[in-house]
Each structure stands twice: as C-alpha cells, then as structure tokens.
Amino acid sequence: MYGAESAKFYHAQHTARGKDYRAEAETVVEQIQARLPGAASVLDVACGTGGHLPAFAELIGHTEGIDLSEPMLDIARTDLPHVPLHVGDMRSFDLGRTFDAVTCLFASIGYVSSRAELHETVRRLALHTNPSGVVVVEPWWFPETFIDRWVSSDVIEWEDTTVARATHTVREGNTSRMEVHYLQASPAGGVRYFTEVHRAMLFSREEYVEAFEEAGLRAEYVPEVQSRRGLFIGTRR
Image (tube, rainbow, N blue to C red; front, top):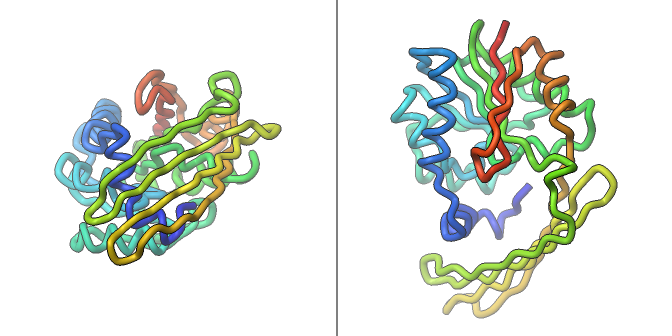
C-alpha cells in the first residue's frame, strides 16, 4: 500500500511513465458492456487516487470507489467530490449493496498474502455484483511472466516538486518484492529521501480462475491488455 508521501504524487508519477487511465478505463468498460449491455453502476475496489473513476462515471454512470489507504482517498476526494468513496480492505469489505460491475485494477489484487486471501477477495467482489453482473480483475504478473531483478527509474516534475524514483524488484518464493526509493526536492522542503517496500503475490492463471469459479463467476482471461498483464473477467452465474 502506498504511504502518505508517495500518495501525493502517485497519479502524476504513473501518468508521466505512460499510464493512460482513460484508455485503460475504456478497455474495461468495453469488456463489461460486451457481457452486460446497459451496465449502469460500477464499484472500483482499490481505487487509489481515483485515476479510472472519471471515465467510469462518464461511460457507465453511477460510480463508487473503495481503498484501504486514507492518504490516497484524500486526494481522490479533492479531485472527485461527487463520487462516493469508502475506506475498506478488499479482503473483508461489505458496503451492503451491489453493482452491475465491480473492478479491481492496476494489479492491486497482488497485495493479498495467500491463496486463501485471493479467494476471499474475489468472493467479496462477487458478493457486491448484481445477478448477471461482471467482475473485472487486473492481475499481477504470473510466475512465468515475471522478470526477476527488474530495475526501473524515472524523474517527474509535479507542481513545484521534482521527484526521482528508482525501483528494484526481485522474486522471493511465490512473491515479488519491490523496493522503491524516492528523492524529492522542492523550494520549501529542500531535498528529502524516503523508501517503501511493496510485496505482491505471483499467482498462476489457474489459481485466479479457481478463485473466480469458487466465487460463482464464469471466468475468462483477456490477454495482452492493461500493461500486457491482461484481465480476468468474471460473469455471475
């Protein structure tokens, strides 16, 4: 989960690296509408700063978001004052209502820590979906597609701040461990350094399908979209 410091420039940093939230949202909506024409409501789970929500609201209609990180939601609330946003854990949340579609994007599903938690999370997504509704999950890399010892770096300008970011990602058993280092410089704050560690599970394609099927969802996998990680689409039986 991203902390208070990185949340401030999370959206700007990923956009600068080429992440196109609008195009990704359009791809997801296309998949939803192909299976449920007329879908009119969507819940985005692990919505972060809400990068996909404006397009969802425009293309689908009623849109809500939920995330575990208060700092991320604080930013989303400022940018999207009319979108209902909730604090909650994707493994255990219960909003007491359902939607035509439920999404969990940007590989957020990888933050669960076991197969049991994967199953419980997908079950939660399904429980918040209307009959014949659609669940869309963007996975983290599969074990065979993950690149061990991956290094990336970038420098962005955000408002009056310059941020240099460098990452190193390694495989540790059935998880990936990404160490992120930030160097932040601004006129008021000077130069600051901080670091974060993100761990994500390397589930197989079969493990995702198993979780979907157990949750009562008919599972499909659409390859090569969303940064080439693909999408799992589940339709409620």
